[in-house]
Image 1 (cartoon, one colour):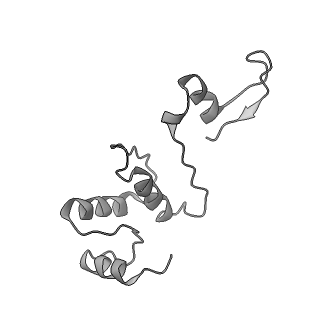
Image 2 (cartoon, rainbow, N blue to C red):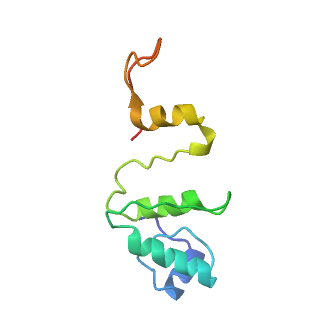
Image 3 (cartoon, one colour):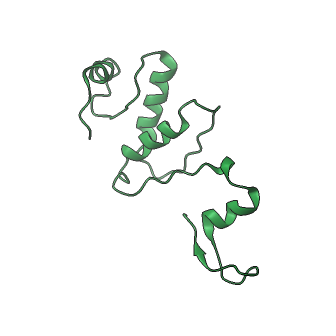
Length: 111
């Protein structure tokens, strides 16, 4: 776990999360509730759907879940689905077989 800076350490001490690497600076009630929820689910074998407006920290929350889980030694793959055309999303995620269309070669997906 990365060494915490002084401000993070003090915040973690106030929220009793001294063992949990948050990388989130702040102490309002909603943020504290979010960090508590992330801590509870980080090391569980469940799927998590993170939704929210642009710029609200969805990727940061996903990275916190990953980095504080037993899967932290595995790669973290982030994918901006909104940046992919709908027609390519399935093949990007799951791959595609050779010959499905003219000139298409087999390609592994990221999942």
